Amino acid sequence: MSLHTLLFNKWSEYQPMANPNTIHNYTRMMLKYQQWEQNYTPPSGLNPVISWTCEQFNIYFNQNTIKAFLDTHENLNTKSSYCAVICSYLNYFNGETKILEKSREFLLDIKIEIGLETDKHKKTVVQDKNWRSLKDIRKCLTKRGKWIDEFKYFDDETRSKTLLIDLQRYVISMLYMGFNEHPPVRCNYTMEVVNDVAPFPALLYKQKINYLIDTGNSMLFVFNSFKTVKTMGQQIIPVCDGLETILEKWIHYLIQNKIHTDDTKNYLLYNSRFNKLSDNMLASYIPTAFQECKAKLTVDTLRHVFISDECNLGNSKKYAKLMMHSQMEQANYWKE
Image 1 (cartoon, rainbow, N blue to C red):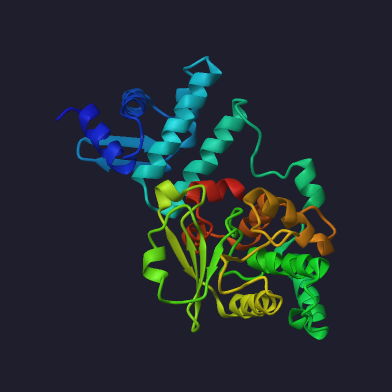
Image 2 (cartoon, rainbow, N blue to C red; image 1 turned 45 degrees about the vertical axis):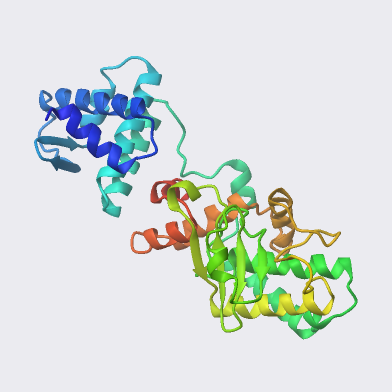
């Protein structure tokens, strides 16, 4: 078996949805890098940062070697393409978190050095202006939660649109930043609420709808519709005790105000007309849900904050799964 066929087959196993022509191009480019690397003598004292072997295919990476290889190409687009291929290669052929994060780190340094992009880990001016730590955000949420409990707003039966929106703001803030067990996902909480255990098995296979399943004893989020569903598949996440308590109060409020009824579809979140909240509308509601923090905290900013403050090598894989993105994507969210 030729090296090209060997590498092509392995790459196809890891990326079954990729276009075969793309895999052929990736394979060709990696073989070119390997051929060049075998004839390159790096400066003394530099050890390979990463090595990988598959049968007769051996390849070594260190920052100096990759930089030297990229310098053999004058075209910036070509340099960028090789960077992308090397990063893809490392992502699919190395499962170790330390290797992946180290490879992304030095590839980013190289791309910055040759002018392909700015440092993704530095906050933009807008991000810096609106940045709040996870600790400070949760202080605001705790204060607001105590105020809501003190005045028993979840027991109100006036069907007030103003109160509905105000309580929902609090629910949204707790869904996104209230608990480490539920790190901020994208706008995926526009879901149907099912209050009976019986339909649950059938619902598992109903695509393009997200559900909050209330079995009476516990709650589950069932995500069938989200950005990375094609690669990650359906995600079922048990609701933690703290969030479950808040959602029980919220659903109680919706029932006693006849927003949730037995003869209609019931949703987790609503607009001011008591209709299902859309993904785009949820995105616009999120900054107002955190207005006590005195910053414009979008869903993207919340994801940056959580990953920057909470994620590390030990929990990276766990949080990437809960946030429904790859570890590579997660590394890109981290900010200094």
